[in-house]
Image 1: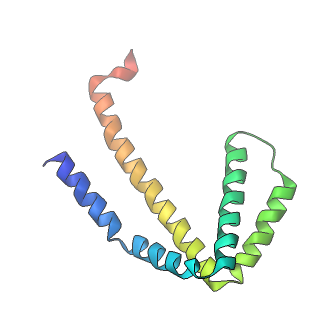
Image 2 (image 1 turned 90 degrees about the vertical axis):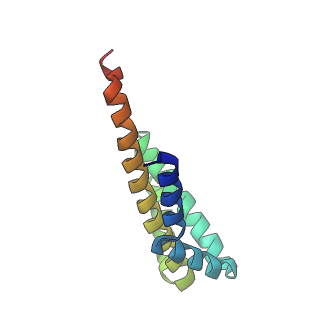
Length: 118
């Protein structure tokens, strides 16, 4: 099996996946809904900021948490924003899973060389 051919097959499968189709369709809907676009962008940025702070070991920001909760309520009341955010979250889960699978496979090459034992 040619690794590059398999990688291109995987890329094609990703582009044709149900998750990508759902994300693309949801993105088309919010392009025409400025309120939903702003809301989703603000929610994603606030979530990323909270996630980064957690990874950095920082204390949870109560004000930031409240803002995120308020945004979640707003998103839940806008069907286009809600649909996009759900598709975006699912797509990110798939992407993280795929990255882990590839990383694990690549790590096997390092194990063969026993580089971690030096």
